[in-house]
Image 1: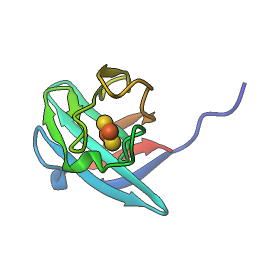
Image 2: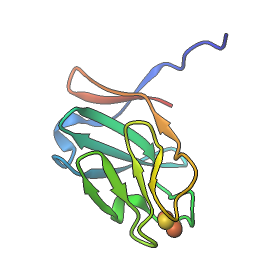
Image 3: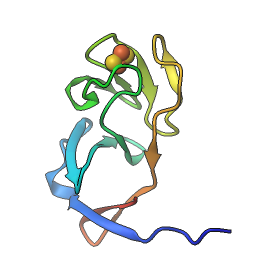
Image 4: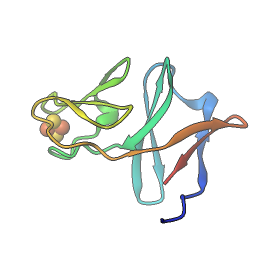
Length: 105
Ligand code: FES
């Protein structure tokens, strides 16, 4: 079994938009960090349908709606919940530790 990736600090937890999505660039990767009532979640920021930036979309609870064609994904597991999105988006394990949002990238 492959070793688990280490946790990596990506942003101060205080810097997240409450109950919304925040864009964070980590190296060449553009990520979307979601603050929700049940915790912090993270995904790649670019929609896997047509490459739009999900951080410019509409976020409601646990669902991010893409700004370009209104496809939508559940940020908890990446599953598509509304067409034209049909493929899981790439999500990452996330947590808050010592005031920092950490991801396994
Ligand atoms: S680019 Fe996101 S649904 Fe088309």
